[in-house]
Each structure stands twice: as C-alpha cells, then as structure tokens.
Length: 108
Image 1: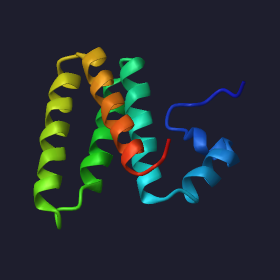
Image 2: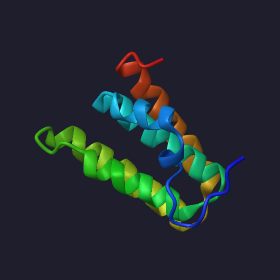
Image 3: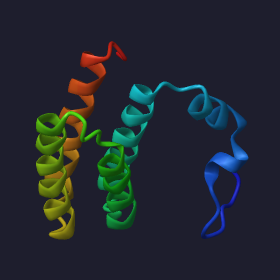
Image 4: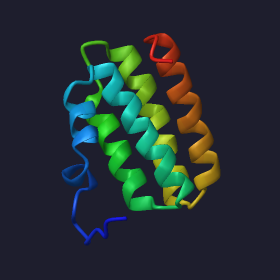
C-alpha cells in the first residue's frame, strides 16, 4: 500500500481513477461527488464533506432556478448537519440523494 503525504492527491497514483473521472459524464461526476461525501461522513471528516458539498453547490445550474434552489436548500441543511457533527444523518441524506440521482440518470 502506498503512503500518501498530506496534500497529495490519490488520483495522481491511480491511473484507473484518473481515466474513470476524465471519461465520466457530468451526471456520473455528480454521483462520484456524492460517493466522496458519503465516504467523508463515514470517516467523520468534516473538511472533505464540506469540500464535496462545495463542489455540489458549484455544479448547480441556476438556469433551472426552482430545481437549483431546492438542491441548494438541501445542501444548506447538509452543511448544518456536518457543522454540528451529525455525520450519520448527513451520510444517510447523501446516500438517498445519490440513489435518487443514479436512478434518474440510469447510473445504477
């Protein structure tokens, strides 16, 4: 097993992961971010969970204002959970979002 130094990106050492990300659709990338958030919550890592949430917020398309605002409200709630160290509840919510997302875009 490789040792990783702080600040090192695991993807730099995993060509399969790099290829998977580079060839992914936008919908698949969002699913990967949900996976990262779920993992971060399982590890009780608030920094990684916040980073995943920030990426999800940045991905919102406000051309579809109502939908984007709905997701934004869910993401605000998730940030509240993470800030209050309620990782189990946040993980469950991220898992539900990921399942719904995957089903909507046939990513199962």
